[in-house]
Length: 172
Image (tube, rainbow, N blue to C red; front, side, top):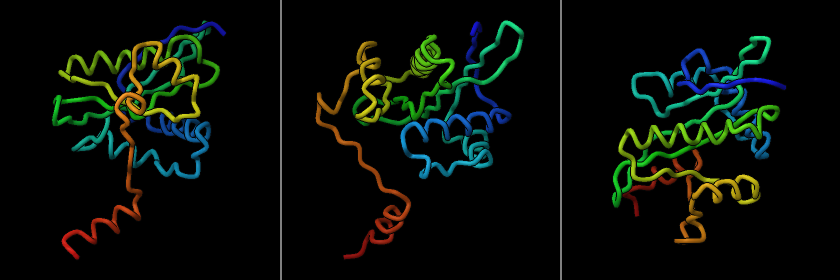
């Protein structure tokens, strides 16, 4: 398949395409049952008064002129009390027929350039341990696996645990 591609900032109109790719990614990661995001939530959270994230998309144009969304990167800013502003890449995804053409790397590089423009000191992301192909790629381009270097563990509260924990604050 012959095509060219470009990367641009996502808009409200891209919600359905991005949600479709998020579901594809969730299926690949064996987590589709956990994927509850809808286009409506995506639009509200990303394009409302207080955006929770930023998103860029890759569009491919075929030789016949057909244009379609083929990838995305979703990121947001976090803060390090040691180093200041950081960017966190939540997802990078490229549809299967468009992989191995540099699109995923270009999506990641675009986020890196945005991070530099915003004065970020770090670019953070996570990768499932079984995804050795992705881990190998990230390491080959200079990413450090903090699991091995500093023994950091990623922890989280899910919704039920979050509510349970918050309700116990101040109680002994």
